[in-house]
Amino acid sequence: MLRFTNVDHEPTRLPPVYGYRTHPLLPLRQALDPILSQIEQLDEFIKIAQTECHFPSEHGLSHEESASIYLYTMDWGEKSL
Image (cartoon, rainbow, N blue to C red; front, top):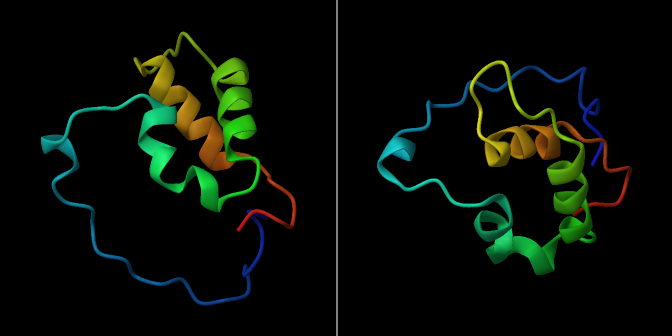
């Protein structure tokens, strides 16, 4: 999944995410378990993110939160979905 694709497209205005604070925080692997079989090498990328993320965080993020952001910002190449 390339992060820099579609840069010439107009941005889409998305509604804010509501209700996320009412749900418990899950470990990254558990949160992504429902889609694990749909994304090639996701399990390996999760492990990389958990190992390479910036922790402890000067912003007070948990290890799982830091790994989630790391995973979100990784360049996965052209074949991810």
